[in-house]
Amino acid sequence: MNHHLVVRVVSKLLIPFILLFGLYVQFHGDFGPGGGFQAGVIFASALILYALVFGLENARKVAPDSIIRLGMVTGVLLYGFTGVASLLLGGNYLDYSYLSGNSVSGQHLGIFVVELGVGITVCSVMIAIFFGFAGRSHKLDKLEE
Amino acid sequence: MAVTVVLIVRLHNLFAVVMLGGIYSLLAASMFVVFDAVDVAFTEAAVGAGISTVLLLGALSLTTSEEKDRGGVSVLPLLVVLMVGSALIYATLDMPLYGDPSAPIHQHVGPYYLERGIVETSVPNVVTAVLASYRGFDTLGEVFVVFTAGIGVIMLLSRGGITRRHRIRKDGT
Image (cartoon, rainbow over all chains, first blue to last red):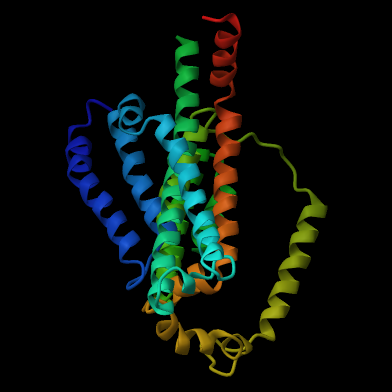
């Protein structure tokens, strides 16, 4: 899409704001609408927009496959180990009340960490799926050449 | 929304169908905003209108953009659809009015979450509190579902790459 000047300029302007909005939805999800899932999707959509406009190769440089796979696993493990942590601290699995001295702040902390895990996993998975499809069509293009 | 659905069924150009699907999702998202379900609207707009449209376009670039005409109307599927549809419409007659405070859904655990949620978790957004804390196991399961989906897609779509790497490793180069 090298010839679409308007698209390139506008998306270059928009991408930082989309990323910022994704982070806002992630970390403000306790107070306003949103949460890990929505934030992950918004964050991923910024990268997908980047890949659409500036090409898959450049996007892969920003987010290499290894980091994306690491992110997929990290998010799930973050969630799972929050449960294990509350288990070790004397509560039930995923009972965040025990994560901190105060049950209420423990709940808040637990929700925060868990939502972060959800966000990381969802974002990585969405990018991975998109790269999977896009990389596939790229390969076919090369075969046809 | 009904217009887009009819068009999706009638049209044979898959590119237009994907675009109409995106429009449908956007309309659904605005409908959720009208119903005050902002979280759901968020998700619908981002996933339905944004990412799934892009993914479908990506899939479309791997195949043709015209639907094959199979011709004729098959009777059995039509009958099944009509029966299920009429059963669903019959079921809606029994449902309580939208926003009725005495509806069963507002009598069960809902009031507890609304009253105790902010006291027990200090999270003002009840949706987040319910999803992450009270229904933590469900959300953990959802994350695993998303994770498994990602693994599945990676394994299916990047198989060529992995086998090539295997071959290189076997050769010792």
